[in-house]
Image (tube, rainbow, N blue to C red):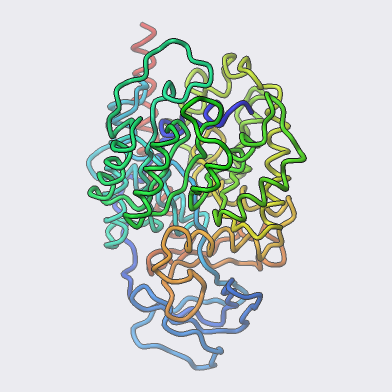
Length: 506
């Protein structure tokens, strides 16, 4: 892959989800007793069989051996027999569909659609995540409108007025591509401003504005020049922010080099493919550089979100010239708006221009390289997290987390290591002050209940019986019922889109 921007640079405009039409009421964050369940804490290799788990006011209050007549006054009892309770999953790299993103869309088939006044569209996306056992999601930057919507959603979920995972909203900070052009085309570099900084002062101002607006973390992007990139990293640290994003561009007069990037590291690198950029000689990958890269990342203290399923999906579109099928049972969660973005001409990965770009013939090799590199990172002790870049074409919200977990299993991680990447490592990255994220007494109750043991087979993460999200219980049956209520809304949305298409052809 020639550069990360050529494959993954436009996700903030992709994939907008659909909503349930009726209001959804979560159970209050009260008292629940999960009776006779196997607990997988994930901070050890233990499985605690036959436990009664008391959850109260959003916390795990007690984990005790099952007592034949155990009861808790005013508690909702959940039958845990034959089931497994463990920390909920986190998508550490997602671009969430929101009503704000639709309002900001440049696609005339999408912009200005009537979504109603009840935020039902946003609600459907949140329920889709819960359906897959996802109780945390980190949004890595979008439009101003979508960010405003997400900041509002975060508060609604925290207050219990909206179902959904714990949201972490990131601020994307990037400079103009022309500021770090390796092959200058004669175009002038735009004047620096905090919205697209090319000076250290404006980079600092961008971070400070993010702090004022209440973002959770900073996403530095690769088209920041050397000085501005450093200023953003350092100011983020001063403001108490973690950074997860792209490595700086290489090769221009004002660009960083590899030594600089690892001397001033991000807390988390957003893709293994970002590191593949650093292993290129011309248009070729250098396999011998894998161990050196893995060692450099380990020494820097950064963690990595590999997003292997993202690369796999892009390669599939390049080779097969079509969007890969969504896993069985999940197609109904992909709404008509998202399908517009997944189809030509909106889907750039199906375009001839994408196929004709320099280095396109190395896409498949880049995916193979990223897989081997991810394995090397793990062996070096680099913490990995699960991220999907959903809703990239072919990657639906929620189920794509499961797909990425399988990718990590296939590169050699054991199920326990995959589950830690899917939960504990992300909790520790995005919310280090809020506990370990393990299924232990005193920890927050963001948990998934599975019908089968994921340590025996990672594919069992598909067997979700329900989730505790922000301490509220959602059975899979209730989640599915609420999602089904959106079918009438979806038909109405499809009619709006068809009317627009008809108007453009008449």
